[in-house]
Image (cartoon, rainbow, N blue to C red):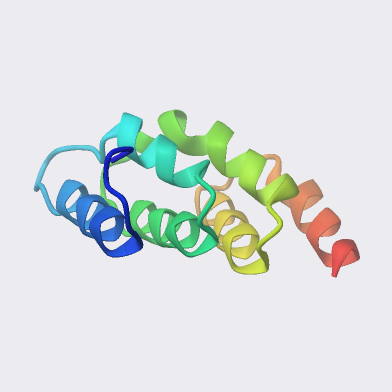
Length: 104
């Protein structure tokens, strides 16, 4: 993922990892995407995680999603993270949503 120079290549890598049936999305690559410099890829990674049926990803990605929800500069990425945490019934979502509302 790091060696991929452009947006399209990185997006395709995320899609390929997500499309493997029965396999949780790769923590190394999705972790890089969630914390990377491109806001669109951060939002896209969150959307792919939201579409996953694997419940084990909650423990893997909740900390990164909380960081996104609490302080991402991109509104779309922050909103996607809050929405996913809300769907997961994460206990931190109420406070994060209040921060986001007051930040706009």
